[in-house]
Image 1 (cartoon, rainbow, N blue to C red):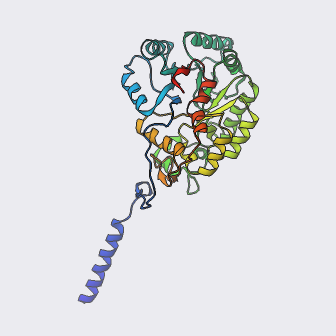
Image 2: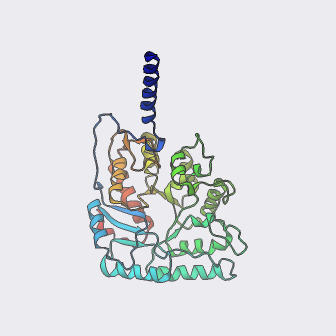
Image 3: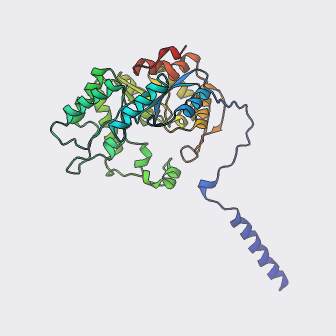
Length: 361
C-alpha cells in the first residue's frame, strides 16, 4: 500500500516539475552559448544620412537629439513627417531647423488626400506641393495609408496609382525632389496566421497588423499599383521604403532595380532581412551600391548599433533587438568602404537636394 502511495506521489511530483518548466513560445529566448568574436559598433565608420525618420522638428529643442546624432556619426536626419497634421507644423519645423541647426535636418512634406473627389484636387495638390518646396521642403513622403486606409467620398479605397495623383508625381519630377513612398506592409501580414507564417509571433503580439485579401486589397495588387507609378513617371525619383518589402527576395528586388532606373530604396526596419543572408545581401548591395540608402524608421539610439554591426563587421550569429520582428540570428556583411560610403551618404547626396555636402569627406 505504501509502495503504491509513494509511486503515485512520485509521478505527481515529476509531472508538476514538467509543468513548471513549460512556457509560451514568445517567452522562450535563451542567450546563445556560441563563443565567437563580437564587435559592438556604437558609431558608424563613416558619417551617414538617415533618410527615413519621423522625429518632429517643430517647436522643440533639437539640441539633445543632435547630441545623440553626433555620438552615432549621423550628420543629417531626414524628417519625413514634416507636414503631418498641418501646414503650420511644416513651417514651424522649417523655421526651427533654419534658426538652430540648418545643416543637420532635411524636411519632407506630405499630401492630404481627404478632398481627392474635388475636381480641382490634382491642380491644387500640385500647387501646394510647389509652395511647400519653396518654403523649404526637400522631398515628399507618402505613407502606407495611401492604398490601405484613404477612401473617396463613396467609401472606395484610393489606389496608389489613382490617376488623380499623377499631377503630384509629375510635379515632384519637375521640382527635382524625391518621393519616399511606403506601400503595403510585409507580405506575411496577408497570409494565414498559422504555423507556416514566418511573422506568426509578430501577428500574435500585434494582432492589428493582420490582413486578408479583402482588407483592403491583395498585397500583390497594392505593390503592383506602386510599381505602376514608377513606370508611369520615369522622370521622378522614388525611394521605395523598406527595400520595397523584398528584402527576403533580393532577386525580385534586383529585377525591379533593373526595370525602374528611377527607383531607389533604403533599409529602414529591414536590416534583419539582410543580416540573415550575409553572402547574398553583400552581393546585392555591391551590385546595386548606387541605389540603396541608409534608413532606420523608428528612432532609438541603441538600435542603430545593430545596423552598423550588420553593415560593417563580419560577426556571426548575433540577435536582432526585437524578437517578434526576427526570431533568427544575423551575420555581418563586412561591406567594403566604398559600398559603405555610398549607402551611408553618397547616394542620398545624389538624390535628395540641399544637403550640405561639406559635412562629408
